[in-house]
Image (tube, rainbow, N blue to C red; front, side, top):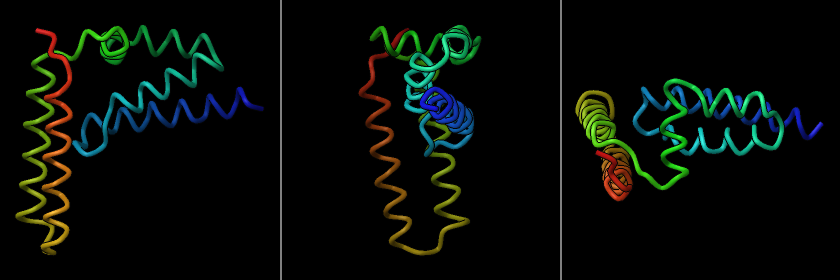
Length: 120
């Protein structure tokens, strides 16, 4: 039973990580790391698939090895984050407190991304 629960959690985490590629507030790497942790404890086949995945695999390996993330990925992430936040703050969200919360989240996510080691 534990094996199947871990596979489900891992699979949901992969889906959330994939969605996080397109939604700047949803972090990709933590979900993929959670998926890897679940898969390594439940299915070596799924773990191998994730680690060897042509898109996710390199990022997970580099992150786990402490090599950091590519400068290009940092620039893309921060640009997309702020573009979506500005668009949402100007055209979608009308409540001031929500705008302030969004700004604080954007600053924190930007700080986190910038604090990660950069692989050039």
